[in-house]
Length: 209
Image (cartoon, rainbow, N blue to C red):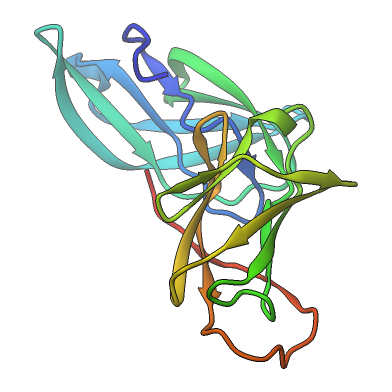
């Protein structure tokens, strides 16, 4: 998406948006003196109700020998639903808008009792949106994993770690991170299974892009 020709308006930052996760929007316009101030992001839900989001940051850039401003919104948490987002200054709209769906939060779980060095364990991903089943992968450390089986609405990834400690996991859909971003799983030293068959949520490690 970053390789597309320059377009003014709101930029599609992600392909999958989730509820219960701080979301942020960005957009850009060519610099014009009258457009410096009073810019905001405005969302409309399925009932056409308006949600106004203030600009948190404004930065100046160059492209094709011209100035433009990039605007970044405050964070907002949205309920599940369908939305449209635009940039607006008072009552004047600028550039293109985007439409997006906020889905239930994607959850990564792992088998705590089996997540030990050298042991085969299982990572489970739940609430993946319909229609992207063949585009899901996990990035665990530097390793990409596309091998999974689906049972109901749950994706099961087999995994064996050679390292002890917190391991960073990214859920990727169409090559882009979900809005819940990174997670950490805890790999324990090899030893007896004392906890039984226990699945626990991975710890979110939210980072902004």
